[in-house]
Image (cartoon, rainbow over the protein chains, first blue to last red):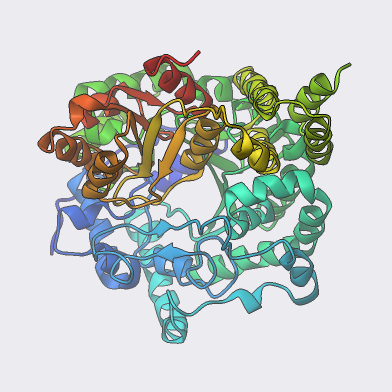
Length: 385
Length: 213
C-alpha cells in the first residue's frame, strides 16, 4: 500500500532527535508518541500480530506514522517480539516474568500485561536469593507462556527486525526506540518476588538483595547488548520503576538501586549506544542523581508523576527530557486540551533544546488528540533563530 | 517510657521483632488486647502521616501493614476470648477491575483499611462487574473500591457502576477508585464518588464516609 508522503521539514527526524539529545536547538521540538499496539484498533492487524509478525507489525507502524503525518521516534516492526520472547531472565521475558500476551492468554487485541503472583506464591522465594548466587537464573525459565518453538524463531525474526530498524533510520530517517531493553536487578527482583514481598525483603534482607544485584549486574548489561546486537539498532532502553519516590526512601534508592543503574547506563553510553531512560512513577526528589550520568547522550522519558519543570531546572543542561503528559489525556481529553498541554511544556522546557514532547499512548487513544500534539510541535514548537 | 509507648515507637520505627516482643509482653501483663490494637492503629496512622510528609515511602507502609497484621495474629486468641468484642467499622468490597491485573496499590489499601478496623473483601484482580455486584449483595457492603492502572480499566469501572445501578445497589454504596492514573476525569467517567492515588488518603475518605473518627 502507498502512503501519503510526509511533508518535508528543514531537518530529518534523525537529525532533529540527535540535535535535541545533544542539548542543542533543532528546527523544532521533536515529538515522540510511544505507540505500541494502537494501530490494532484501526487497521486489520491484531495486537498479537504486532507482537509476533515483524512484517505486519512494520506495516502497522508505517501506517500510523503516515496517518498522523509523521513524528520523530518510532518502534521497529517486530521489536516487541525481541523483548517479550527474550531467552534471557529479563523483566520483559515471557519465559521468566508472568506476562500474559495477546492471543496466548489474552484476546488477540489485548496488550501484554504483567501478572503479579499472589504473595504466597511468588516466582522467587526468599531462599532463592542464595540459589541465584549459586546457579544464576536460568533454572527459572518457564515454557507455558512462550515455547521452545518461539525461541527457535528468534534468529529469523531478529533478521527481519534488523531490516525494519534499518528502513526507519535510512529510508524514513526516523530513529527507533527500544532496540534492546533492560532493567536494574533491583526492579527485576521486585517483579520476581512480587512487589509487596520485595518491599519486606528490603527491610529484612537488604544484604541478600545487594549480593544478588552484584552477582547479576554484568549479565544484565550483556542481555541488553545482546538484544541490540540482534535488532541492529542504536538505542537501548534502561527502565526504572520501583526505586522511585513512589516506592522507596532515598536511603534504599542509594544503597540498592542507584549504583547499579548508573553502572548500566554509563557502560552503554561508553559503548556508543543511545540510552533511553524509561522512568515510570515519581522521580522528582531524586532527579539530581542523574547529573552523575554522561552528559548529552541520553534521553529520558518520564510519566506525569515526575515534575518535568523541576527536571528541566535540574537536568536542562545535562540530559534530554520528555514527560508531563498523562496517557489518559489522549483517550479522555480533546484536541484543545492536548494542544494547551503541549504548548505549556514547550513554553517552559524547550529553550536550549533537550526536549521531546510525548507520552505513552494508550491503545484506545483518539487519533485527533495525537494529531493535535504532533501538529502543535510542528508549528508552535519551531525554534526561531 | 511505658511499654505501650515503646510499642508505639517500635512500630513507627519499623523495628519488627521488637514490636512483636512488646505485644507479647503487654499481653502477658494482662493488658486489654483492644487497647494494644489501638496502640498499633495509632502507630500505623502516624506512619501514614510520615508517608504524606514524604518522610516515609510505600516500602514503609508495607512494613507497617505487615507488623500490624503479624501483631494482630498474636492478639487474635485474646481478642476472640474477649466477650465485649469490637464490631467492624464498615464493610468494603474491593478489586482490580476486569482487563487489568495491577494490584500493588490495592493491596496496600486493603492492609491499611483492615488496620483501621474495616472488614474488607478483596476480590483480587481482573474482576468482572458481576462479581462486584454479587459480593456487594452478599456482604451488604458500605463501600466499593475499583482499582486500575490501564486505560482499559476505566471502561470496566464504568461497566461495574452500571451493573450496580441495574441491580439497584448504586445508591446503597459509596464508590472509590484508585490507581496512579485516576483523577477527577476518571472519577466522573467511572461514575464514582471519590478517587485517590494515595492509599492512606483513601482510608481517610472511607473513614469520613462512614463517620469513623
